[in-house]
Image 1 (tube, helix red, strand yellow):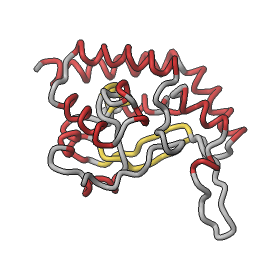
Image 2 (cartoon, rainbow, N blue to C red; image 1 turned 90 degrees about the horizontal axis):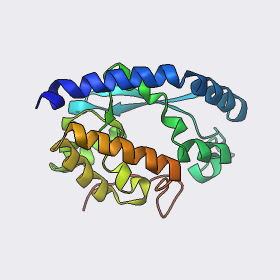
Image 3 (cartoon, helix red, strand yellow; image 1 turned 30 degrees about the vertical axis):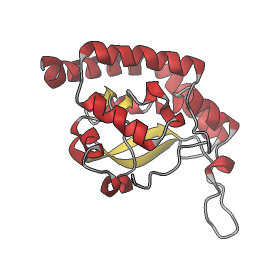
Length: 202
């Protein structure tokens, strides 16, 4: 109980601050490369629901171009996601700005991933439980398939985590996350370069 209420936040703040300081040269290099290869802005910002569905601004390094068709519509993700963008995603370097969201308390190191605002009305009562905790940079679903599993499987892991938060459990997920990033496993779904949109559970 103490860890869930107080210890988790202490760990989040401490580790994110250390990581930001230690990885500052990496932040700089990635920012320069993104600006050079993909253009401006360097950061991709989007509103996402956090704990209790409170909306916050999530940041990532951008991984796609802004290429459009003759009608001014953005081209499919598979076209706009460059080789460099795929590298950022496969190594999770695009997620580094999320450390600042952890530092300011909008996110946690471990928790359900923050998804799109438009998904909120689509969750069933069980799936809504994923918002009873702060969203995470990584989570139980990410170390059990990431984008290679179905939405329903993801939400099952999210709720399982939300109902069973422990210090040892978080560290197990942290270590498994590092392993997954190293071997670059589960980045894409079986059908596309990014996860298909969630359309509700039938």
